[in-house]
Length: 289
Image (cartoon, rainbow, N blue to C red; front, top):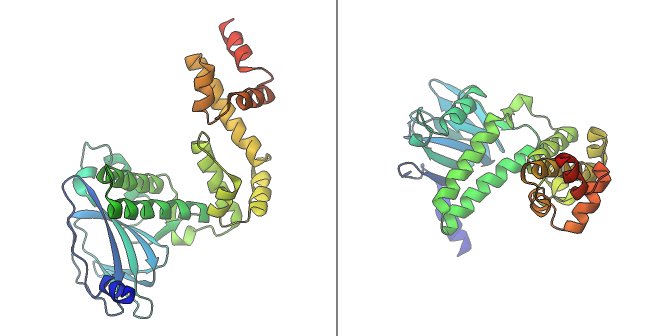
């Protein structure tokens, strides 16, 4: 029964999809070895992840080779088609974005423009390191889950997924395939960039190492080589730096504690004094004096 159900998902022609006005939808397209499609254009943008297989993206009398883990950004009304390698047919996960979301005057317009500026139209891209790749894949999978489960607010969440992907690309987390850095140091560098933005969330060495495709021991060694600090010291330093900023702005110790990523006030006091030489209360007094 499961095999028959799986066979129904494998397509010989493109799956029909409608993207409602101002919204985002996700298309998971499993191609048969005999998959065929005409050169055509669509009324929505596509952000594509090549999850499986390889083949060609054909467009305007030209083509580019695509393979597993490539990323593609295809604007609306841009004629193209996918041609599969029959020995390794494609599975594509496509975030379909109504072009009204990136129209002139919209919040996404400058991000969309920056995304297109990051590469040549029709050329395959990939995440610049293993860490960045896992972040991209998490977004695509989140989109699939949200559309499948359709819980309250799923349409808004899909828009957030599209925004997240476009921002990652616009910030340079996605590069031409030739610029991909496969070395472990590049992945750890990506994790450091991530920590600098997400220090006030729960962070574990094991999770960071997994996203870098490294063992915790190897990750720890490379992390210290790049920062000169242990993972916990680096993370706490970022948190205390932010806590000091929030203390200056609010004068509220408990609020600054939670805002900077600490869940225990006593531990926050110990770490704050270790990094600044003062308790939070004395730090506030020094500001007021």
